[in-house]
Length: 310
Ligand SMILES: NC(=O)c1ccc[n+]([C@@H]2O[C@H](COP(=O)([O-])OP(=O)(O)OC[C@H]3O[C@@H](n4cnc5c(N)ncnc54)[C@H](O)[C@@H]3O)[C@@H](O)[C@H]2O)c1
Image (cartoon, rainbow, N blue to C red; front, side):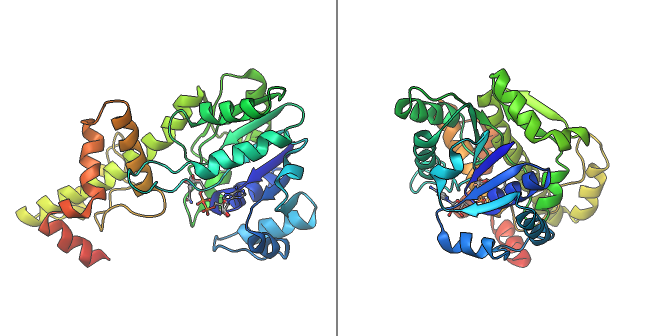
């Protein structure tokens, strides 16, 4: 398969390197020419265990190419992944989709033959519809399908997570697109990774629901920690005690400074905005989490504990 990845950041670079390692021909595109030169020299701009070896070995075998020439990379590709950033939009906290839509416009002009356009960036429900509309408006003749394939890797364990995923989510109703996506991920499927086929909108929401649920677990155990401090209980033992329960599980139950990182806060904000846009402003899970992304609402105990863990 000829695969093109647009956006060679954390997700794009890891995905591109691993997909090349599966045996596909991969071209990674970025508008940052310094990053592309660095990568072509076999140097890795981020720290991620194991990534350098995979990139260098696939560069050497000619399966991985880095370029700034988007049009050339898209022409003739079987699949074009969009892996650009979707930061919080200033003002309302929704996901800023300007990079995604810009890339959609650039892809449209270069499409050739049947191509799946895959959103790997974390994007709100309905973004795939808009990407499809943008491409169709610019290229009535194009033969393409827009697929949602959210990424769940963790920074620091990205290679392991990409190659041993808990699941691969493929959101599309197009049978031909399903076959192309399945072929790309075939080595993982052979390795028993479950492929979860859904509609595009469902796949988009799965990513936000997963991150909001993880943020909820962290938030929940932090609130139990507040209570432990008041009543003289040990929150670590409480977390262990409930984590033994298979219905709950031990992960994301470490009391600490609250959730952070490059994804959870922005994705929770974007989910809250989606709920508001669909007239569910009082959606209780979102409301509870909102108090944890807005520092003004922290209780004194929580503030103290957060300072302790920072
Ligand atoms: N980082 C993570 O752990 C993680 C995990 C899962 C999902 N995600 C999601 O994946 C997406 C990408 O995240 P990231 O951390 O890789 O972002 P990043 O900021 O590290 O990388 C984005 C890259 O896209 C490039 N880019 C932007 N516009 C472009 C354009 N028009 N043409 C070519 N290149 C362009 C940028 O130069 C940059 O190198 C986001 O939606 C994020 O929420 C991230």
